[in-house]
Amino acid sequence: MVQGRRHIPGDIELRVLNRSRRRCALCFQLNGDLTEKYGQIAHIDKDPANYKEDNLAWLCLDHHSVFDSRTSQHKNYTQAEVKDARVALYLAIEQGKHSAQSVAPPQGRNADRQTLANIIAVMDRRTLILFTPTSRETRMSKTRLDCLVSFLRNHSQPQHEFIDPEIEELRSAFRNNVIQFLAIAQTLTQPLAHDLGRFSLSPTLRHAYPDQFIYHATVLNNAAIKTFESYQQLIRGARQRFEA
Image 1 (cartoon, rainbow, N blue to C red):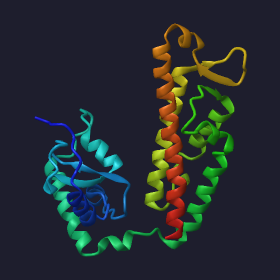
Image 2 (cartoon, rainbow, N blue to C red; image 1 turned 120 degrees about the vertical axis):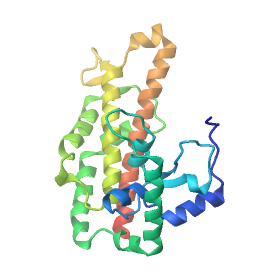
Image 3 (cartoon, rainbow, N blue to C red; image 1 turned 180 degrees about the vertical axis):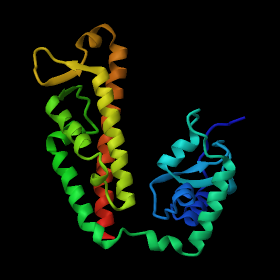
Image 4 (cartoon, rainbow, N blue to C red; image 1 turned 30 degrees about the vertical axis):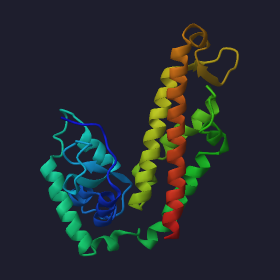
């Protein structure tokens, strides 16, 4: 029986992080990828109360999500498969093989810098005003949303990806959050008849069903915050990699 989630003791967490060097066991097993990944410590038996070291493995966000999911469209990764991948990863780390993949090839840095500059140019200041974490504004300018649509249209092809796999993972996370935010905005907002070019949550909903209005505003705001934070992580992460 699954018990309530508990925090992994610090000494156990540190051993997992040190042995994995934040490399994803499945990325290495499936693709030979030994670059550092943004991820989480996964409970292999999916029992969050079981924090024995043998039950823990560092997985990237994508593989962790797939491992925890239940779908009939894809035969999920098994517990034995993840443990086997972890053993192979730890051996590779002990042999120092991860060091060779830690940094993107120097010839790719200039291309990645240009890709970052192009994204920053699309996400101009008007867009960033929308993504203020403390904002409870429920009206949005179509111009700002167009910036996000432009980002998806102009930065979704392979030629727009980063060469550095860590930066590319951050770009992919930001792109996914943009898609989710736009879908939520399209579902929950409507054009304002008296203010062309702007969208808002339903004013009728605010007065007739205030609880539902607050819920929708929270969902919209949380999606904006998540998108804002993933954009910030992309910019900071890319600049850190460029300085490495």
